Length: 299
Image (cartoon, rainbow, N blue to C red; front, side, top):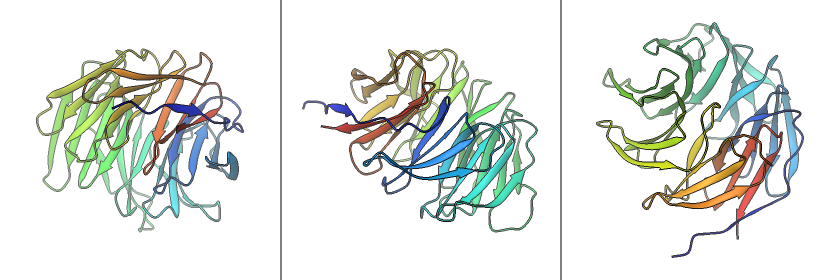
């Protein structure tokens, strides 16, 4: 079966300086981006139109997560603060502070009642969005270095750290499983069936890990990732693995054969720091240090 061909649409340009994160909402109708210019921008990726800008951060925006019902999103960055936003009004409804250094990563649980945040201070804090308390409801302190990435999946919290470990906390069972990757972890992404996690590390390798026992099932290489946090993802219901690269290309691998099936150029020779795949159709977006967001449609 031939692999789909992706064509590049008109870039989305409004940010000044590097764009660190792009994320679809749950329907794929809109894309949120955050960058060094402290702005968060809501886009319509199909019309290439800017819908709304969100401004509150005092430093660069490093991560964004969207709630299940698309009514709110959470963001974090260099100002050590987690912001909870109302999408329609464009205002912040809650602000959570407590980390001692920049906050690298955030995520919601399934019903958006809890936010997890991971920081350069090597701590993960859990926040109750329904409570008026400013104190975290739980603190995870097992990492020995910066928390670069995390994801909440059901009762599990999966974290990746610069100390080279992927940690899976099962809050329901009260268990912790630690898997040593051997290199700083830049990205994790849970598989659709919840059995595996995709792990990017600073040895220019992406590994598919069995969460139950830590076994490496597949590995993917060919891109360049030695210095920067680069986030990878699954594409087309886990048929593909997709990642940015420090050589200015978006790489896509076939999951089964591990073969590189696409090398897409669209950001010059700049670092592509984040990619996200549409939740319902063959489309993806990428962003990087060139300040642009590229929309890739399957043709």
